[in-house]
Structure formats: structure tokens, C-alpha cells
Image 1 (cartoon, rainbow, N blue to C red):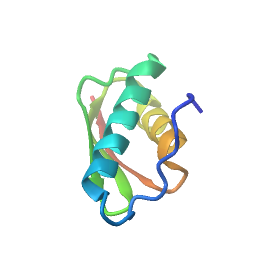
Image 2 (image 1 turned 135 degrees about the horizontal axis):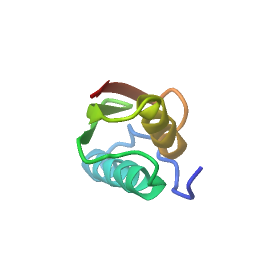
Image 3 (image 1 turned 180 degrees about the vertical axis):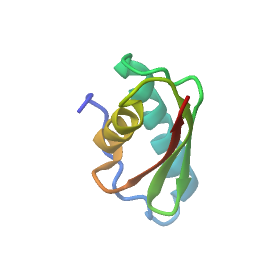
Image 4 (image 1 turned 90 degrees about the vertical axis):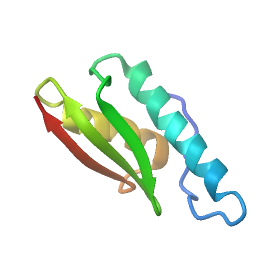
Length: 86
């Protein structure tokens, strides 16, 4: 855990857009703060209750590490990794 608040209630009515934006920003910040993977080509989006990571990573184990970081923000099981290794 990197010290970012968890956003596990993605379906809060009346604040969905704000919650999605806050969740995306928190995940992006956590990925950048980790510093051990290149996140330049990672896109973070929201689909329902899930955070979707898409794009490319460079190193071995970076896909798993990016998902692990995102799960540290939103909770285990709420991240779908669609990342490819270059």
C-alpha cells in the first residue's frame, strides 16, 4: 500500500463521474509514485466497478506489478490488466 485512499465504492449514486475521476487520478499517481515501472504508455480507465489498465510496459513482471499497485488503491479484485509487454 502506497498510502493512497482506497476507492472501493465505485457505484455511489450522484457522484459517479467525480468518483471515477478521483479513482483514475489516484491509480495514476500511485503508478507514477512507485517508480519501479515505466508507466508512460499505461492508460487507466473505469468500467463499472473495475479499473482497467491498458497499454504497454517494458520489463518482465511489470504487468503484475502495475496491477498490484492499482489494487493497492482500489482493492483486490477490482483491477483488470490489459497490458502487453514490449
